Image (tube, rainbow, N blue to C red; front, side, top):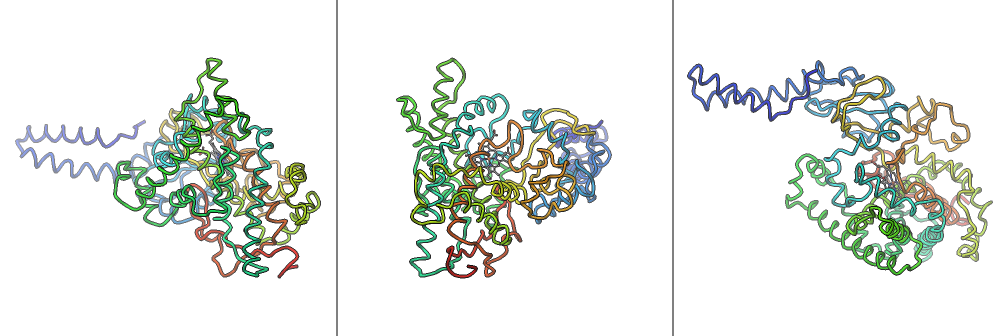
Length: 545
Ligand code: HEM
């Protein structure tokens, strides 16, 4: 089978052949070579790459393919619709493994087949690393931590981090989750009191981003960021800049995946990225220096990083490879980045969905009230011993709501991988180098897994799941050794935030603002373009009570 010849050899062969022809027929050399190259380049891109190769030669030609011209493929559909939505349609029509094209016949696979997903994510994750290009911009902000490490490096890093994310470790962090969540609710209430309002609209996503940043700072590293009280702290500003998604920034990000040197273009986005990277890197260096010092002196902090630093010390003492200073610093960058925006987006979407499903909101509030009545009484709301005993995992409907919200709108809608060797996915041969998408925002909504009501937000489904729902039908946290290490952290944090907010406020849609579901933008997370603005009513006051 013809392999996908790259442009270099084509140019070399064309040049050599045209030199031969020029000599043999005594033609002007420069003109002959120039004409041959001028014909070869368009032929290569327009005929070979965009027509002959994908349709007649590629090994992937047997994979059910989305109809369309490979020259521009489905690229415009993909970039103009919500991430994962076109693929939902295509999988429904063409089956669980499909092929589509990016411009110039670039083949892409999307996988929604249980066995193939298991093969990629659980059994052979190291044969399917993240493509180098996809990592380029992420590495500047997220560091070279566990999220972007591959192969043996990843195994070593993940092992050193596991203790810090055990269920026991997360449980011991609950007081911090409560503290910050209650502060956020208190600040909303104070604003309403100061403005003599019983009902007020809040843009919840920005507030939740600050709250989760404060939580990861303190629970993750024993470091108080306090961005709830000080919205303009540099580290929060750094993330605001990084995740800005004006049109020009997105174009430049896209360009950097193909032309890495474009990060030096003196554009605002590049300056913002460098400023943000500087702030995040300095903060991570400051934190890790303190932590390593504490671990050396056996200071008994309980945050995740302290556990990791202790574990690392033990590993090194027993002769195993531990993590270097830079790797640990990069883990902090990873946790800061991966560990706050994701949960904030998940909670913001949940609050939005509760505001559009008032009966579910009431049922959830009733459940919170029956298990944690003290939260509804201002005189006991902040009682440490009651908070210590409050276990959000004992609320079954809360569990259903959170899972359903994370299924319905997965904060990370997709991940991309590239095979390193020839392999077999389902019935198809997949050559090394194939780019493959695992789209949570597609898989989580497929009727083949979830039944005909896959597109409904229905928390009760979790009490009676169809047999077709396998673990890989829920891709919000991915699966296997590359799945989210912070899953338990995020789930606990999410439930506690909802307990703190729903015990103080009732939420309704603010119809003066755009419907957040209408325009979800992909910027690492699936973000509502204008945020999530909700009308919060103090419980027992104002409308609705
Ligand atoms: C609702 C919230 C969250 C969601 C939806 C989520 C989702 C994910 C997903 C899909 C991945 C795989 C990404 C990929 O390989 O392409 C991932 C990896 C990861 N997540 Fe999360 N995450 C959440 C919260 C958190 C939190 C709170 C932390 C840290 C405290 C965290 C830390 C990480 C790390 C370190 C990885 C890399 C794991 C590895 O490659 O071994 N995440 N997450």
